[in-house]
Image (cartoon, rainbow, N blue to C red; front, side, top):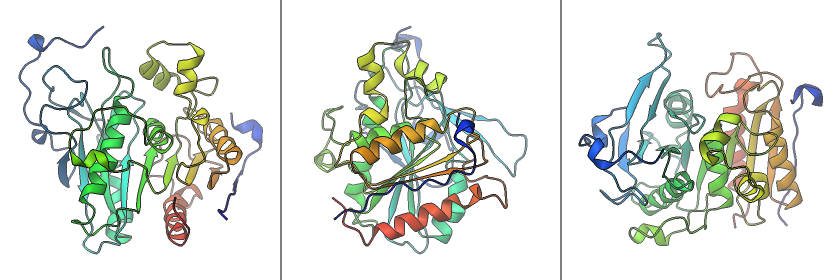
Amino acid sequence: MRFHRLHLVLALAVGCLPAMIVAAAQRAPAPPVAAVVDAAGERLDLWPPGAVPGEQAPARPPRLVERSADPQQPDRYVDQVDAPWLVVHAPDRPNGKALLVIPGGGYQRVVIDKEGTALVPYWVERAGYTLFVLRYRLPQPGRDRQAALADAQRAMRVVRAAAAQRGLDPEDIAVMGFSAGGHVAARLATGFDDPVYPAADASDALSARPSRAILVYPVIDMGAQAHAGSRQRLLAGATDAATVARFSMQTRVRADMPPTLLLHAADDAVVGAGNSLLMAQALAAARVEHELHVFAHGGHGFGMRAADGSTTALWPELAQRWLQASSTMEVR
């Protein structure tokens, strides 16, 4: 019998939870994505050249922006992602487990460092996970709302297809998403078999279901608890009940989705902890194995840079213990 639980770590009272695509003629010829070096690691193209589903115009060069003046604390992001790719961080001593990482950015950008490169010392070098960090397409006029889900599904399949060659267990590939990337990860966990793109090659015959899902301060709801920026960019002003429900992940929960770990700070003023509470309630109702941990402090976007000495800074250890414990449990 599967083990179902809702583990709440509530350090605060409940009251504290508070134009069309630019024409091809207007675009300059794009250099290859490899011209943008956003992080050390192997670059792995997600789609065959010129075959990104739904993209008609030539791919623009991705735009890389640095927001930090401190070289010891980089805070970069990338946008204009028209030809998605993965950045692979492989350990010297792999543990055989892979993790698809989907950084946040409010569906406006894809964060590179605190939800990407900053994971490497603890997750790759220390724990031996092989990380596949996704650079996914962002909403824009004329682009299918399901583009990010298509990229996430394709990423899971590409990783699974290469697992044996890389010494990884194809049945032990989890997903971890942050903020709006947590919404993408939740879309993958609940919609891993949704037909959102035509098959590109043999990889697309493989399952896109993650073995486990870790959602860190995730955007979940598109209704009352929504992060306004994510909702506006993804839904482009649509307010009809069907669209709002389709992209509110608590309404998409299903009994055969992967076990899920939710992590949030009670004082998150950007994406309220109510998002994770809604998801946990839906998971409990569907009898999906899950845990919810709400920390007293941390705000939004702490990533791997939570304050030293805080309980929030323990989340990577908590997440790894949860993943390790899962290895002895039956995975559907």
